[in-house]
Amino acid sequence: MTQEEVKNIVLDIIVDVAPDEDVTDLNPAESLRDQLDLDSMDFLDIVMELRKRHKVEVPSEDYPKLATLDSCVEYLTPIMQ
Image (cartoon, rainbow, N blue to C red):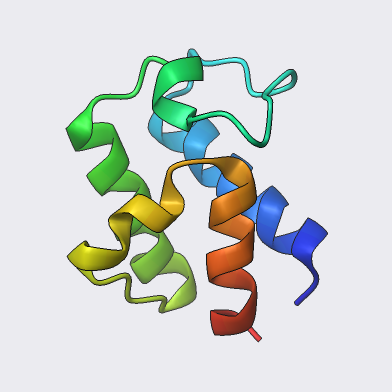
């Protein structure tokens, strides 16, 4: 899976979890929580959707690696091969 495909998967999940958020102008290097109105439950929903849809297990100690869109892509691309 390419980095672009992983990015699109993450964005699709964010849109499903927080449908009122506009993800078109996200800065990929800035914290998702700072740019979007995501609370801790929304973040956990994103992690759960990754597991449900793509069988990706993200241990809680790795949650900080999902802080930005760039870091999500960097972390998830090798896992989703």
